[in-house]
Image 1 (tube, one colour):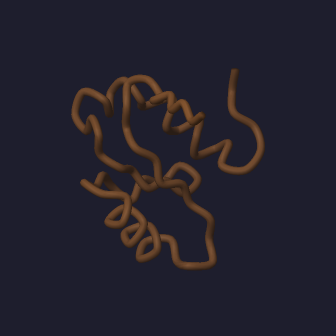
Image 2 (cartoon, helix red, strand yellow):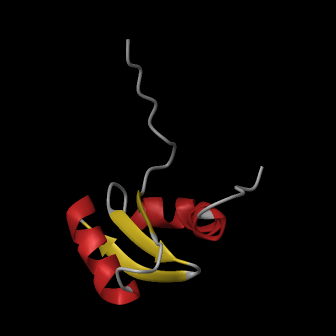
Length: 76
């Protein structure tokens, strides 16, 4: 099922490249705005800074960690 709503384009780009990126950038963070990739970074903070520098503070962009499958967290 394709993502809808905010960040749908960015999430689609992420899903299209997930397998490829998991081979070369597993655990890294990627910053995406529309279909433009700002790069891969070792921390969320680095990806956020790069996204702000590349896309500006007034444009939405996605920062997401590259995993083969999404981690599941249980909170009780």
